[in-house]
Image (cartoon, rainbow, N blue to C red):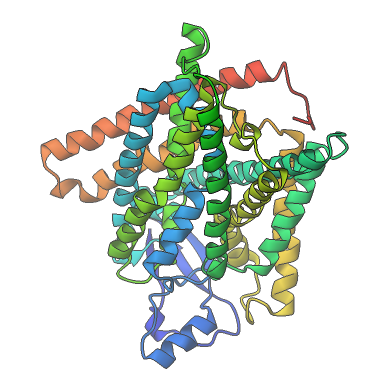
Length: 474
């Protein structure tokens, strides 16, 4: 995709009316995109005597965040409340040896794949701030559309899963104080969706999270430390646990494949170019710092709570570790509410590509982010998007089955298959025969794994469809 537009240095630092730029794909197709330059960033940069490398076609801030802030964005995703489920969803089906090796190997492979993608951020003399833009530049308009569809379906399902997770945390908190069943899961999901919408109205773009990333880290540490300490106490007082892998041989095959899919989901966002767009130049070097931060220090809490939960409860570990632990009610309530609040922040990260698309394509492009008309726009548009998310979450609270299918059809292709193939397309002339063979091995291997994960997910959906019903109170 070739972009013919004025450079940021020739653009005015104050933009009062939306302009457009011409996006030309390799097949000759043209599209018009709004030319929106955030005035506050431009003015601040001018005061410092330097101008950020701004994108010409986004309404959101880019190129302004230090690498450690981007690192905390990644850590917020990897240590979301989903970590409370990995003892049951990963370790129980795989056991100690395969589960431990799987977590470490998945981290190494994910780090490698994300580093490949980060190195493709600047191709053809332009920063590609969206995954679909990068794919469109390399492959053309058809793959641009396919990548967009895969990515947004994947993120929509993740966002819906976050709302279900927040609803489950609310219900678990309520059940600690009253066991009358009056506050059902669909009601908790509706409350969660409303709170997520309020947060989305007040945070205009990903870079604006800033202090909220600190709160997210605090909330994560609270529920992880509580789950770790209570699991340790329970494990020390409990008799010998059963660590055998449950199920027959046939069932184990499918649960193992599902666990491998969960391993991939644990470390990857499916939106790395959009996150990298916010980082300051040099964008590749700084993004690699953020990735190392995520996959070293940032992953330690995940390992700690996952291994401790499995050690304490063995094969009886539930899919939400706080349901296993025993301890004072107020401590468990604090952990559940921390999980709820962290989920609200984490959802905003994974929803930001959709918000960016809606703001850029349909927003006015005038005034600051908290101008009345821009605030009303966010209330209407983001509120509508999250209403759909919340409705799907309430109707299908067993969405985890569908998320497994979505991950197989989108997370695997986006994170591993497409990343390796794009790297071959761009850097292939510089690679040796052995390096090319390695990338093709990754491409073919993860394509096969994606197919196997899709089959396992479809089987699980068919089994659970006979058990669950719409608006189920799980």
